[in-house]
Amino acid sequence: MDISSFKPLVNNAFTALNNSYSPYSKFKVGACIQTKSNKYFLGTNIENISFGLTVCAERNAIFSAYSNGYKKEDISAIAVVTNDDIITTPCGACRQVLSELLPHNTPIILSNGKESKITYIDELLPDSFKSKNI
Image 1 (spheres, helix red, strand yellow):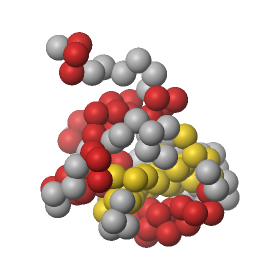
Image 2 (cartoon, rainbow, N blue to C red):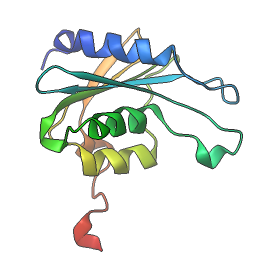
Image 3 (cartoon, helix red, strand yellow):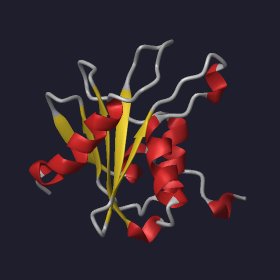
């Protein structure tokens, strides 16, 4: 899979990064969900002084897609971007949410603007907690 085919997705994620509300960590994250019909849903991290109420970019993007009527089978890819020196991966909470709400073969594009990589949820969260565990 060629990373260049995800350029519009990654660009949209960087657009979302510019909307970050991160006055405490100063760590901006952008995310973008792409549907199979090429609709894009942006998300950015929104912090709160009560840190537990902070919501990550990845969750904001995927919740936006679901809020607009899209489901797991409609999603084709997600990009998660930062301006950090190294590529940043989703946090544990986001990995668990992505594990449930994305098809497991969904490309997850990670980028810091200088380098990019494609990964998948099973690589990021092997042996994830599933409904069969309940």
